[in-house]
Image (cartoon, rainbow, N blue to C red; front, side):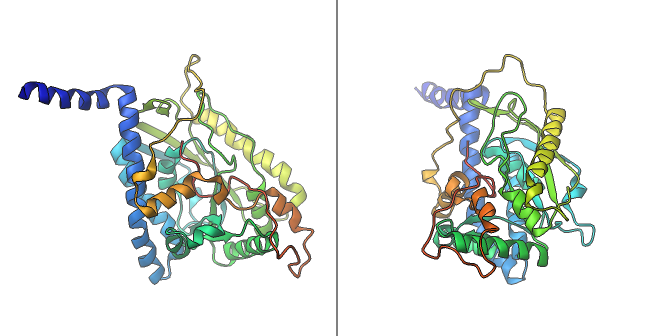
Length: 342
């Protein structure tokens, strides 16, 4: 009887580690659990660093912690080329820039963890300020955008650009706006919002390319391995105007696509394309802070206003006229730190 009972427990455990589907679900649960754990301790990072006037380093500290913790648990290691472009030659810290990175799945948080520089901010919708995650985000220097009021949104964008210049703070974004996990390397069309902000602030764009990791992660597959990341030289935006944004978008996307194809492991020609996105484990069992973090990660409504807001900017008088009663704006799905977990 004891032998039968031990077999009943041991066999499933072995299957979870040896079968691809078993590894997928086991590591997915571990990964989401790591998200919850790091989200919970992130509040302590935020409190401590804000006290010593280093709140813009909170995201860097939390990202590094997540990489060390989750990367070790699931067996992912990241190799970064061009890391010098992440740092400012003046003080060795993060350069003030708009960092743009390709987006594949929820596991992007691991390469993000090793590449996010110091003094990097994120943008979120105003309502998150009053959620359980709000205190952490405020202490980490997040920029809140009121999507329901175009006039206030425009003023927030102006303030964001000024803050980035004066306090040497960078912004992290996914220009594709949504995930793109496919067998072969490729990029979706880029949203223009981040490019408008970079031009408005006169800050460079630093493209970051993560290799296509379909061979390690897709539906029912979650293996260990090494991920290559290449940081490209900064692309200046000084002397550019809104009229130059379309060409700037094309230039950045072409560079990132060429690099993505170059550094990616060749996909099998017969690799199947999933019929639907991968469903991650239900985060309902996470702590309240982690659950709200999951909302920030997964809800595209957390992103800042879209291209329409930037295009409307020129039409708003200098005095800030606009709809004070609240006008719903479109969304640019690329301006959030992390995105839908899939």
